[in-house]
Length: 265
Image (cartoon, rainbow, N blue to C red; front, side, top):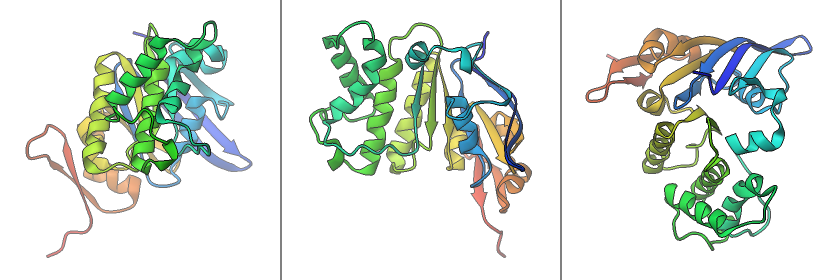
């Protein structure tokens, strides 16, 4: 099986400062990979290399078995979608219009169709925003805007044959607890459809519950990579975050339960 994403010995230096050192991992089709680490650990720098915003000058990033730089932009837009941490829209677009932006790669050789509109509406339904089609995007809450952009990303890769990849930077940061879980449950549904997903997340218990693989970054290096039960341990998390943490057995789920802070007598 060809990996949806394969990062090989990736290094990044600016001047004499190392921003990434020897990052190596693979993400298979249908897998959910979470990247965790403290602020400044290299998470955003790594994502910028995976999206192509920063070129890989040392090491390699391969998507679907092909070097990232070799992918034609139009074809890549059909198979890989990105949800950044923040997206600034200054005009009063209707919500459906924002989601329809995701269908633009499909309209290179044909005009917008009723099928595009149907898909955009379906994607809004999947993020729990059915009925919001004519709402002014600028009047939505931060969490609702975040879900609109997730719907846009879903619309972008909808219907594309072959392997697909979804990249998301802190997609739950503005969401309440219920919508955090619903969003990650949606990601798991997409995994079952064969879509690979890479997410940067800060809530360690959400990571433990939903991720198939976890990449733990510390001091701009990969400290650990593997299933949550193997890498989200008391020792590894304490070293990664520089703060005392305890990994306990979850009382009813087959994943770690992470408790932070010093024990008090």
